[in-house]
Image 1: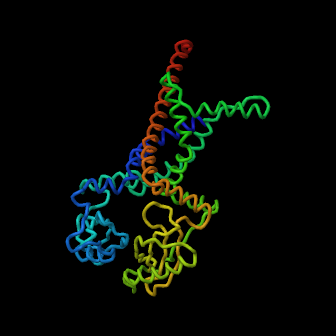
Image 2 (image 1 turned 60 degrees about the vertical axis):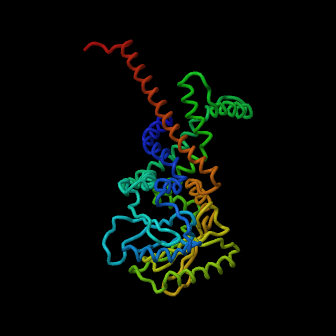
Image 3 (image 1 turned 90 degrees about the vertical axis):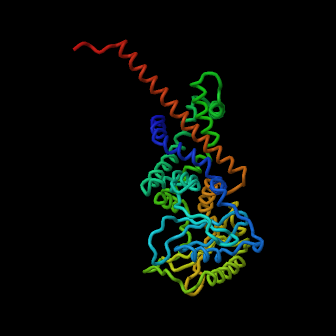
Length: 403
């Protein structure tokens, strides 16, 4: 029965996993590849009178003066060698925009490029965003993202079924002899025998799945978490996870807070400094400042000694947009052991840890996932052809009685 379940689950997942593997092989290098598609706009260098980049708030203000936009998330970790990328919304009272991404010069704040994220007709800079949207199913709207989430959930379950199918059947005998015999026979599943093409195809499928099984499970479940949170969150809470902090929503959104961005950054920085002292972690730099109208709150993200990601800051603090008082904070790995496991799974999925070697490994894993899918389809097609041939042979040998 489980062979049949694994077979049909694999066929259902074929398209999803091929898309995930092929696109996922490129996404660990998303920023570099995106900039490589538009080198005429992406790279920046200081001018004769501008040796250092502007601060992030100044860049956002200059973009808002140049275009009819508002910048909800202000980047604070400003690069020296390439543009600042920012998502934008229409300014209050303005109509819809034909773009939602702006590239700005870090030294002058001048707008270098505008485009609609994921819209391939906007130019080469959208090739990688298009693949990103395809990877998560967002290219097909909410239903597409849900479908990819369901596929990830099926993949998670099928990981356990596939592992079970690699186990050899038990034989009669003493416990020690049985365990040793079982282990000896199972080690054969981890190897690939050359020679017969059909046998080798099966061995490649089984052995590659076994060697990579822990990471395949991590990627499958983290993909479920990213695309199907309505399933992942209850499961995580059952196993001891926490919901984390989120500021309470207001009865009505507050689009214009009393605190300006600079005032909010000052208040949040002071609160962060006190928080770091009380919880014994080090502040390493500010990442971004975001205003959330629905909660009337600012969120400041910082890079701290608690972070595990290679880049970016994932320690967050929220302050009230009216008086600057601290509302709450969220450590990057959560509050419980389960939260830590989920956070690490997401970091591994996004290739945000262990530097370049791991990013290269994730790219290779994407290709290997495609090999798993293709060999699985080959195995299914050969077995299907064999079954049909056997059925025809039985019919010829034992024809039905004449009517």
